[in-house]
Image (cartoon, rainbow, N blue to C red):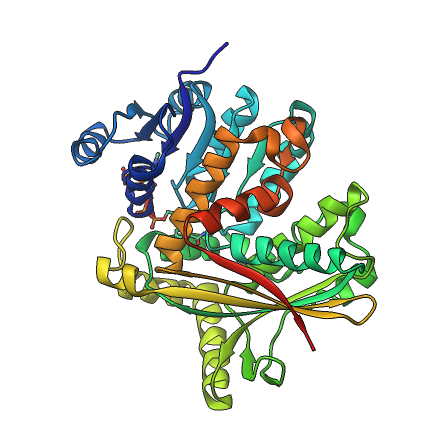
Length: 402
Ligand SMILES: NC(=O)c1ccc[n+]([C@@H]2O[C@H](COP(=O)([O-])OP(=O)(O)OC[C@H]3O[C@@H](n4cnc5c(N)ncnc54)[C@H](OP(=O)(O)O)[C@@H]3O)[C@@H](O)[C@H]2O)c1
């Protein structure tokens, strides 16, 4: 049966949700049928008043699974920003799998993603339904940046031995993001963040794989990039996603390399700053792990529904540099960068372009229209998504390194 909407934007009244609605109003191709959705009719009406185009409107509360089920039945692609996902995400993803509705979100809650994989990967694979969490700043630049480097080395005749990614970023903090981090601590899920292979299938959980998948805990100087490298606070999310991508490709005989290793870091200009960041990150992890710490964080962070000013969001940027080394010793440098606050402008672009790729070019995506499962951005959307992001203003290139 034909569904009334190509894409439904759920959580559209939230801080990032409102931005996704405006992105669709500005960038959805002519003829695309889309709708905004959320739990509060009055808020949705207010959103619609300021929106160009003629989107539909659906009321669905994640506490009322029947309403969520009815919403998902009406969509070919469901995009959701209603988080914390461990709180509001289950009925949405469950209904999408039931109705074979493709799904994208911007969660960074990997323990929740692990549960979604365990519950739905088999059925979604069998049905050809693409369930693609983690389509925001975490983890699209890491995942597509790595894919881009691996493909470049492949074109140069070699499998990839390692990719070392390093980030520079400027932006603000959303109340919803802090709320999700606090929820991870409250639920006890945060304990799983240290599992470096958390998202890998059982076929890729070997001792060797674990040995080459360590989290960075210290600081060192990187002569190739001329910067100090410190632990990156999103690495415990992004590295698990990139490793799952490699494992999913490897299951089809298209793995990145037999001993592929991926690491991630933050670029700092001085050793002192790099150590300052490392200590700050340790303090944040401690705070998330304690009830009192979470109470303090909730008090100082913006409330859910709030986020940075327009000026902060417009003035932000990110850059990731990825040093790739081939099995044969060749080295390349991948660079991906874009203007705008990573947690908002970049996230919204990544998420919306992911949904548009599913809605408008399913046949061009890796594996063709039948690929399904609980997948990563690289395995589900791959280089066609990278092309879309380039057209939307991302810079992404790979060059040889001497
Ligand atoms: N991956 C990334 O890089 C990235 C970047 C930014 C954000 N995020 C994540 O995205 C999520 C949203 O962030 P945000 O800043 O947009 O947060 P937010 O402004 O608090 O938005 C949360 C949304 O969830 C909705 N919601 C709450 N309870 C609901 C329920 N029972 N049923 C249906 N919807 C419900 C809210 O609806 P109301 O409007 O009615 O309150 C709102 O639309 C968070 O989990 C955050 O961590 C990820």
